[in-house]
Length: 455
Image 1: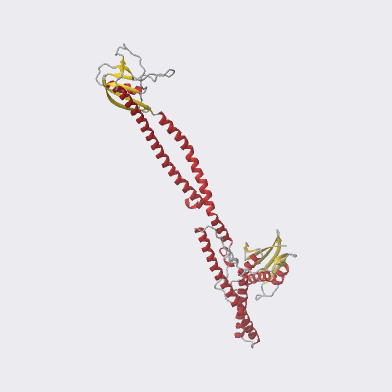
Image 2 (image 1 turned 90 degrees about the horizontal axis):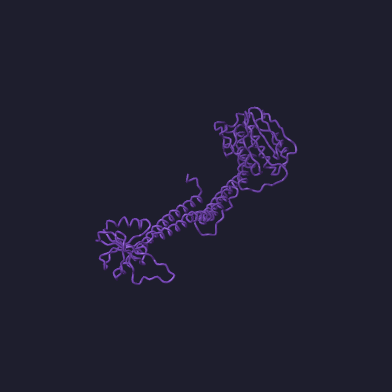
């Protein structure tokens, strides 16, 4: 599934996942560090309060208390509302209050509260402490102190509520902030990768449009001197070598075909003037075949070189009638014409004539008794059908017959068959005229259909 995703999408998902993991780890570390820091601050505050109360008690404090029956209570202002003091040895538990000599409230200020002193066994302390300071709400600190009334234990508390508020505020920022940041990372990565891959898309589009007829074109090289620019330069150098090789091949074929035409014409003339005989007749047949092949190769070289077509008005009906009526090696094959008048197209009359001739020659070569040539107009197109009543073309070879030097019947007599270039030339001519050539469906025999835009 991942291989079907585009590079842009895969890069975006990868970057977003990496940032998500990094943010998750950072958030966990931040929450852990902040929680520990705030808890230590609360513990330090509790220790500070316990230590301050211990110093007050050690300096001498008037302690007023009440006995177990509640008599003799003395109201005093206390040092800190979050401090308790216990004794270790008194058998009866009583609640005392202590006053610091300096703890006097200013006019208009509230007294800070009462410091509670519990005298009695330590067995009673846990229940009292649990009611006073639950462990999940406060941090506790315990400190012994030598006082005038004996050894006392000071226990102070610090609220953990600020810690909870800070953590809630942090989570309030992290929960919406992390998804928003991930969305921002995804959008920026998508745009950045798209911008980085834009030259690749331009290179791909240009390469898709380059064919054998326009190897002079080159892919665009981006200004950035990165890997994509080097890839574009490498592709252009490859196109340079390919263009050079193809041009040499075309030039060789054209030169060879051109150089062969003169000696073949001279040889044919001498054979025609020679005394008649079986050997001269066979030699003349071979020379004619070589001349035809040379002419085909020269035409293919011109088509491959993408020479500009002479666009002129051509009466395709007249061209078709003239070429279909021309005599051919099998005079017993009946050629029937069904040509619509006033079918005019733009193009080269010579090349269109060659197309019709190749199609009719191919049909006559494979027909059993008859060939039908039809030309009609259909929706702004000229449709040329050349059909025969021969064995037909198997469906698996409908495209192969248009390849160069393709001969489906390898066992037939070489003289009876063609060179395998006729249909390839016909399709190239049709394409260069903005049309097409294909095998049309027929119940029997073969039917080749060419289409051209009409004027």
